[in-house]
Length: 184
Image (cartoon, rainbow, N blue to C red; front, side, top):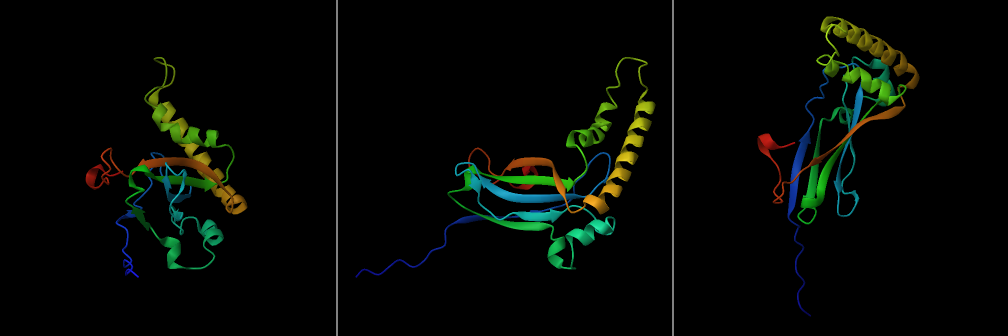
């Protein structure tokens, strides 16, 4: 009988994903939840566990923190995830990031609040609306939206709705892992 080959670990690419911050021009008006996982386009399926990140300050949203963080545990505040890919999966794998927020009405109406600052530069015909008046109107919308969110958290804090989704390519056209300043 011929001797068997000893087990050899497959060559893998490992990388650490670290959450820094989520920034919107209107500021932090509501809490966000993120789900991050790897997806293989050739196999059309997930190839990693789903990592969940809380993108809000628990001190600011105390009632929400009690719903989602029933016990003090260090794992509730993890801001990084370690991923591992075999060499056969590399070129067809992307990183999926899904943002969710507390259930609060229609997402299209919520997006109007986030898009309000981008419309300041395009206020229409000359004399129609001054930029100062548009900014004041947007500030009122943001304040009303923030108060609506704070009222909704105690009632609907345990329910979430999608806010956004993104896909990030991890490898360039040559199959090399993207690192450094050009990394996504």
